[in-house]
Image (cartoon, rainbow, N blue to C red; front, side, top):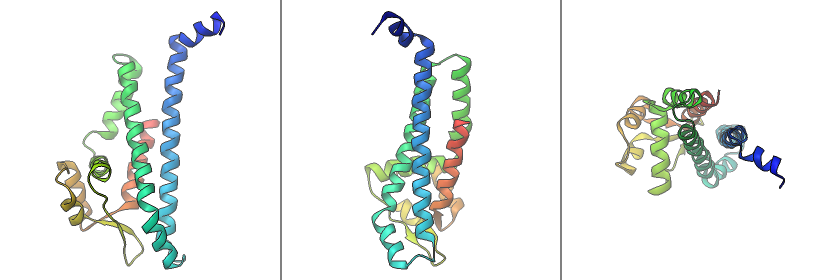
Length: 183
């Protein structure tokens, strides 16, 4: 590599562009995993698709799509936190930190998803069910019994949901919060 290119690639500007590009790629993965998850949810909830096909999608696919989406969401959050460290005490760092705090701090849905991810990954898979009105749901009582890892905010979220947590609702809300983070 010639000296001009080496100097360019070591410059703070180039390194900054690379970090922004990495964050943008993490966001793209997050968006794509969201679209995949919502598409499978829509297929499963579609009463015009044969029930056995929907049941097969539910049985063999939904948890994989949930896991991929939540994993990409956590990766996006972690990538943003890494950028904060790099840009600590700068205008950009403060902007990123304020946006993360605005989106993720004291947010019941976010707390629920993050705790669900830990439980889903490290303890036990929670099985959702298809309701009579074609909604994919988690039973809140079953969720609470799976682990004692739920924090106050995630428990409040489940309480607010009532008997069931609607997967489509919680993931749409989470996605919109992630969208806000990238705006």
